Structure formats: structure tokens, C-alpha cells
Length: 434
Ligand code: URA
Figure (cartoon, helix red, strand yellow):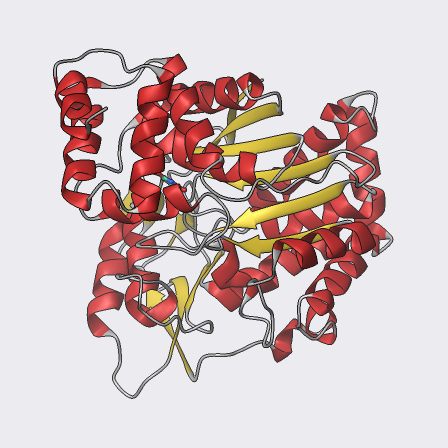
């Protein structure tokens, strides 16, 4: 087989056989196929697409390009939760310990953030000492002992995706349904979970800006997961404004802890409950939504979910006292209020722009090598639909450094639209696809 023939075949809109897809992924992982041919190939896929069979073959080839974690000798159902990414989306931080407090086995592989979206790993690294570079063996040992572990994307798990995602990032080939779905699902399959819960975000702060595209991505990933023999459920949720009030790594960790204490903002709390309930229903630990809801309430009010988070943080090198005293987490040297300039209602928040503002403060990465400042970010005081008066604070900005981040403040303010009319609010959860 020759790579050039396969590029031409896809460029001409033809279907590739499973062995041809395997040849491409194996050759690229080993370094036999150079970046320039792979770039041409991904661009051909970008324009001509892949059908479901090809997408599944691509996912399996990438998942099997490195170690496939075998969790089969750990008793119980192994669960994973994944979000396609958004602004203020710290849901995994609360849901994973919550699910583990029920005895569900949560074994999760997470990524770092790039651009306007934050990554779960970056958030967890706000706990001084927290480590995600753990070997496959240590990961399995911790899952067996505690029922919960989180690992970064190491060189051993889905290395083809690691290489390919970095290439797509710089060749304008990220936003393709088959490529996104196979990229996410290859990592999920390699990490070994039996039950995969996907949160597909939709709206101005999401990868997929329209509900239609988000639904198509959710369907594609559910079909891949189920096709690979893993029970997969996708929830489509709103990302037309930031989730919760906190944006920025340590600030988000505090809000995630608040959820486990029962005192987080309403939208964030609703989503944490929804995912924990979904786990309880999918594993048949709860017979219906009402009993699932009561079970979640009990784990939060008894402190069991918070204790599980503390155990988890300690097992991976952090200090469990930081979970009980999040005021000890990194804090920015300065705060400033961002004031509304008109009376009315918040009618729109350009969500991606708010994420970029947090990145510009140092809370995210413009390039992969950038170092994150865990302390900076925003606490929102006004969200979509809220009434506001000129001079009232829309948000508190947390920043470091001697210079006042005037440009960030200006961009943040411009990302808010204040109108006379109260806007219609989007649903938080659009649909569950299984
Ligand atoms: N996240 C991933 O892991 N891969 C993509 O292609 C897009 C988002």
C-alpha cells in the first residue's frame, strides 16, 4: 500500500477499507508516514468526510496504537465521563468523586486545556503536588484501592491521537465530525471504561456552535462507543454562556468543592446532579430519576462525596486538607470589579470571548508550551437573564502582575450585551442520546 494512493482515494471521495485506515494510523504512529502526507490526508477527510464504518475503524486504529488499559479484573462497572470542553466547565471535578462515593469505579483519562477552554488536569493541578503522570500499573492499583483515579494522556495511551491532534491543531483540520469523534473516543476506549458518559457542549463557547452539529457529534460518538462494545451515553448541554460562576483553575476547583458541599451555583449544581443521576441509572444502582436524585443528595449532605474527593487528591500527591480548606489554594494578588455601563438585562454573553479573557490573564494556554497561572480568572456576578444597573459589578477579575490588565477588562465588558428586554433562556440540558 502507498500513502499517496490513499490520499488520492479519499480526495476523490471514495471509502477507505479498514486495512487501509489501519495502514495509515500505524504508519503515522511509527513515523513511516510523514506529517506532510498526514496533513494532506486529514484535509481530504475534512472535505470528503468518513462514513460510520470508516470512523469506527479510525477510532479503533488510534485506540490500539498504544496500550489498551485492561480493567477487567477490577470488580464493578468502570465509568468514565468526558466533556467536549467549554468555559467554566468543571463538572468532572465534582461528578467523578460523587460517582466514586457510590462505589462506582471511576477511571478517567483527561487532557489539558488549549485556547478558550480549560482542561480538567490544569484545574486539578491547582492543588499543589497533584500528579497526573502516573503509569498504567499505578493507575490500575489506585483504581483498585480507592475506586477513583485520573491520568493524563501519556505517551502510552492512544499515541496516534496525541500526534494527530497536534497536527490537526496547526493545519486547520480540527473541526471535522469524524476526526473529533474518533479523537475523543480513541482515548476513552484506550482508558478501559465499560460505561462512557459524554457531555457534548453546544453554543458560543463550545467546539460545536449549533445544536444540529452537537447532536451529530453526540450521535457519532455514541455509535462508536456502542460499536466498540462500551455502553455510551451523550448529554447535550448548553455552553452559550459559562457554566457556574467561576472561570479559572483554582477558582473552578473551589466551585467544584462547593458543589460537593451543596452550595454551588444553581446551573452548575443541576448539571452535577444530572450526570451523577445518569451514572446511577445506567448502572442500575437507582431504579428511577427520583431515587437517583435522593441518593445524590444523601452523598452530598453526609459529606461522603467531599471525603472521596479528599482521598483522591491525597492519593495523587495533593494535600487532602486543601479540599476541606480551599481558601488555601493559590490566590491572585489583585482583584478588580468589572462594572456594567448600562441598566437592563444581560441578554448575551460571548462565551468563547470570556474564556479567551481568562486565557489572557494567564489561566489558559495560547500555545501548548505556555505555563498556567492557577490563581487568575473571573467570578461572574451576572449571568444571562439577570437584571443589572449601570455601575453594578458584572464580575470580579482575579489577576497577577504589576500592570492592570486593561485590555482584558475591555474585552470582557464587550463580551456582555445588556438589553432593555429580558432574553429567553436556553435549556441547560437539551437532550440525552443513548
Ligand atoms: N478534543 C479532542 O480530544 N479531540 C478533538 O479532536 C477535539 C476535542
